[in-house]
Image (cartoon, rainbow over all chains, first blue to last red; front, side, top):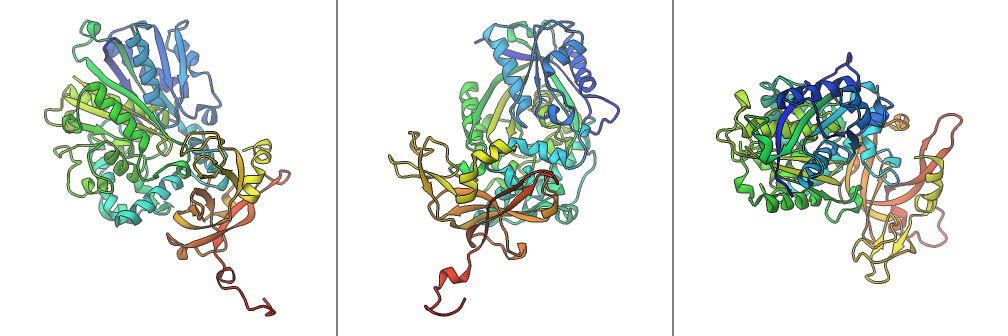
Amino acid sequence: MRDVSIIGFGQTPVGEHWELSLRHIAAQAVLAAMQDAGIDRADALYVGNMIASETSGQHHLGALVADFVGLRGIEAFRVEAACASGAAALRAGYLAVASGAADLVIVVGLEKMTDAIGNSITTALAEAADADYETPHGLSFVSINALLMRRYMYEFGVRHEDFAGFAITAHQNAVNNPYAMFRRPITKEEFVQARMIADPINLLDSSPVADGAAAVVLCPTDQARSFSEHPVRIRACEVGTDSLALHDRRDPLFLEAAYISVQKAYARAGVTPADIDLFELHDAFTIMAALSLEAAGFARRGEGVRLAMDGSIALNGRIPISTMGGLKGRGHPVGATGVYQVIEVAQQVTGRAGANQVPNARLGMAQNIGGSGATVITTILEA
Amino acid sequence: MGIPAYWRTRTQRYALVGEVCHKCGAKIFPPRDVCPECARPASDPFTFSGRGEVYSFSTIYQPPEGFEEFAPYTVALVKLEEGPLVTAQLTDVDPAEVHIGMPVEMVTRKLREEGEEGQIIYGYKFRPLLRSTLTPRPSGQAA
């Protein structure tokens, strides 16, 4: 396996892009990444996307995007793993370069959620769940996370307001990210009083529906310096899986796929949790942040939520998370999120995170979660 | 979910028929033909009693398409007395009275209608366990 590095990236602001189509936001991100890397060609392009067929009536995204950005003819296809589609596309690109099959690869995460109106987006997102035994009973994706949160609160004696720190930190960090959707802070009072979506999950536990595209360019590490002054090594990009349905899990409150992917990533990179300077985790809902911290070894079982209460997750804390806003503050264009996370870690470990720079960040981790934890992909980056 | 998929899962939805593993004894729902405990083939049918308790629950205020008429409604993970968890709606209950550990039993109810011309889908929901099944009435007494 060859060592692989990121030599350029580009992202569109996350938000409601009514004036832009699926292919246009993809092109914005890809062309920005190509410009950043100083390239006008590539060997392959992989598109991470979850629900374009439902939102925009469009499959076949690899060829669509490759053609639209002026790369007609190259290898290109879509990779899908629900909300982990972005990181799954990165994994595909990483393998292509590591194996020697390609030297220059573009990975773009892409979602155009505002092309769907009303409850149809709720239906589309629920396709991450078990279509035979969860969604026919009227479960929304939010409610599946709510089942986890309720049980967590019951088993570990935690109150809903104890989760507030996750959302407050995310919003605070989003203020300084020009690509974030919600660039304003929120208060604990607002968190507690927010409108209920699926009890006990309210609006401010939840990441927003949004449009977005984010792209990175990969090449072998031994060629990276010829393209970029700030190359970032991919020390690991590892996948774990679990059952789609919560009811099929051995212990619904333990993200086994996250544990598997994190352990594989630590082993490949030769590091431990203590070496990680920041963690872009998948805070689609506040409960997921708590479970992710536990599965990654930053907190014991049932204690992940405490890191949101004692300041550990702040930019100068023990394990900073959501440093550019996370899914909650930056926004969660589902299939694009995994690539946004990786770009944010790349910014941090190269000292280019601006006002939100984590002091002396050298080694950062991103974790992209598909469904309620059925696919988890953990990436470790180093400047 | 379309008509063929509803048809395929009819015995599960109407009668809570799962499987039992004859190697390790695990009771399996939904059926999956490979035992999740010992990874060996397991396709012998097993009909669950339909009794269990609430493991977790959530009341949905923003429903997916096709479930608008029921909102708000309460969904749950139910721990069946034979072991497995099952995902289902709760019915015949005030959402404010639902709690973890609440004894429940399976009933057959309408899950959704697929439009005016479409079929009506039935399946399991769970309601609070009726008192009469806890304390049998003396014989001869009217219900």
